[in-house]
Image (cartoon, rainbow, N blue to C red):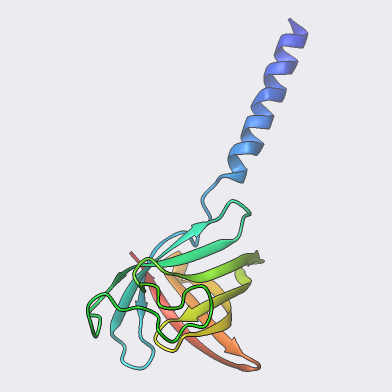
Length: 145
């Protein structure tokens, strides 16, 4: 009887540890991007945790695109000439304390990839996203959907 209880407790502990590995990251979800120059909503990006624990983000909807079904004609990597809707624009973001770093973000209208950082603000209702080249960084605040 004692061994049965011991095994049951060990199994429950193992299950709890396994489930915590699959817990949703607080940054996961859908985010409305806001253009830092115009202040207008630009797209909806869905952020998900990948199997390796990093975060990635895809544009799931373009809001008021300048032309129907635009492609990333200025991209220089594997995203060249691919549709922007559905495109992965955030890659390799890792949890770094209360922020995220170590990843990149693509600005499809420029075709440029920037080193990126992200941080949840306002209790998780907003996400501050920055892209940097050398020491020059630009930030946007995205809104949780």
